[in-house]
Image (tube, rainbow, N blue to C red; front, side, top):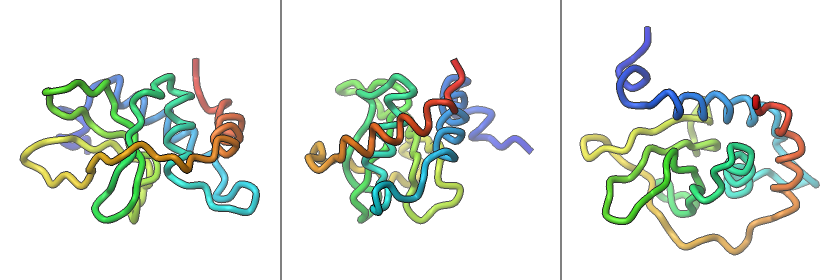
Length: 135
């Protein structure tokens, strides 16, 4: 069955982004250089490959330090766009779309831009995931 969210809440473009992100993340390793890949680098790498790097947001998912991607540009004084989360904490599948609505719980809270981003990890992820992107 195709549920209400898939049918009514997400655009064809958002569903396309989801499919590409899912394919990319399947190519990503659990560790790079002996350290776990974090959502902060994974989201940035996926956003680079999707050509939407300005839509990455750092903040909190509930009580967890987290990073995600907005599906469309976020503008001041407008409703929040939907979320493409490529490493959702405590959820499986880990790559999901989340609809933003005043009627649903919203666990994503924006925070300050992270300063501890490992650029080499992003570069390595882009290299590993690049072939999953369909032109």
